[in-house]
Length: 151
Image 1 (cartoon, rainbow, N blue to C red):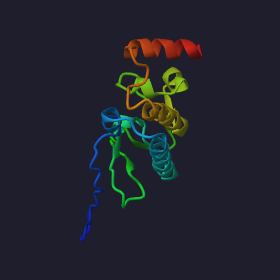
Image 2 (cartoon, rainbow, N blue to C red):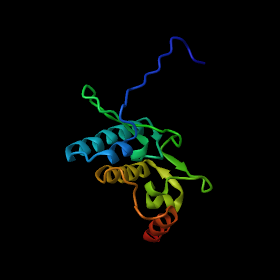
Image 3 (cartoon, rainbow, N blue to C red):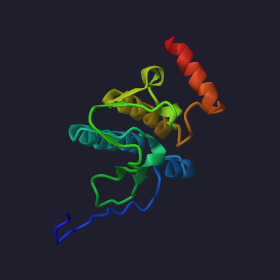
């Protein structure tokens, strides 16, 4: 039961999704480094609270160009988030293949290490100006190529 007073806090992130922001204009390398660092801090916080995000990607981070704020990158979209450190995936549900660790694709087990792998893919997105990973490949091709890599 919710007790009063109840306060909800929303931070202003005026630039929208990180991938869209990066696609609009080339950003300097030091700014990209800072974006990766801030996303890492956010992921570290989630893992310290025993939360698996399960969909770390530039499209699921928000960016606010606020000079007064120490943190401009905010992890968002908690639709796939689960409490705990290990999660058995339902093989019949859609998952973000392009961001999944090879061992997660193979064993359908999601851990904090999977989030860390996804974070690495997200950093690749940041340094490549917000383009989707594995450009020019379909999801099926990504799945097949990654699966062959771990066989």
